[in-house]
Amino acid sequence: MASVIPENYLDLFDKKVFAGLATLMPNGSPQVTPVWIDYDGENVIFNTATGRQKDKNLQADGRVSLALTDPDNPYRYLEVRGTVVERTTEGADDHINKMAKKYLGQDVYPFRQPSEVRVIYKIKPERITSLG
Image (tube, rainbow, N blue to C red):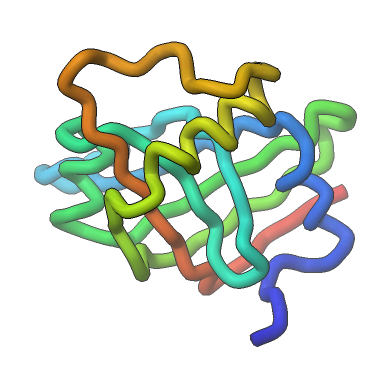
């Protein structure tokens, strides 16, 4: 399947870009969290711990919006609206370590809590808005 992310914005997934992840609270109000992001050529991926608010929100309603701003040009951005297509703990520890290497230059994610269980979310892009 061809990427739905425009080719001239794929570089944002290689940079240390934080995405603003918008989810919906149980009462319908928005909740936004900065997340590290990844892209597998088809889905936007982020990693969190089970039980966090975004995890709870997405299990109840899988619709999301992610806003990525280019750190080299704040007037260049990409918004991805989509739906959760996968939630898994399989490979989540390796993935958060991969993200720690990208964002922190560390081989192992240093902020792990003692009883934390990591989870990967894959978001299928359904609508793209971009500028710059």
